[in-house]
Image 1 (cartoon, rainbow, N blue to C red):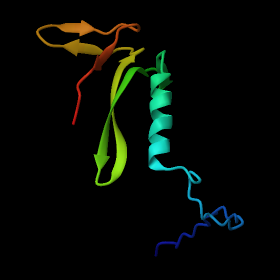
Image 2 (cartoon, rainbow, N blue to C red):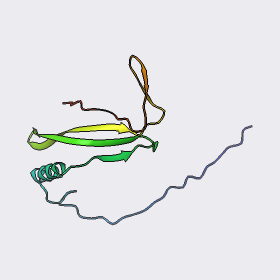
Image 3 (cartoon, rainbow, N blue to C red):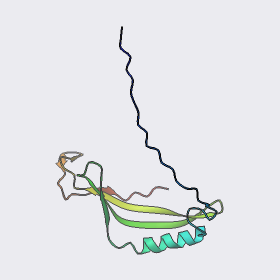
Image 4 (cartoon, rainbow, N blue to C red):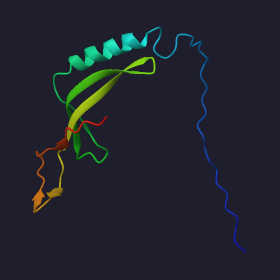
Length: 115
């Protein structure tokens, strides 16, 4: 007869105090004010932003951000076009008519705009 197994599962429990959130997540900021703030931040984007991927070797770099303004229903919004590439790839290759080894400083990316 098989012996019954039992496991203890420890679940962390914590409590917080309730807060009255009548102003919402962003306070009393309107959509138009948020759009203006984002346009200012995007306009100030001057240099590349990079971040490492989970495997710590590949690096994704955002090189350029463009935007267009639109209205969804009655809500103003921005449609972003981001130019990015991947670099710092080890042991990778590109293959078309021939196989080309990717070096550490090579870049792989696209600037395809999707609507």
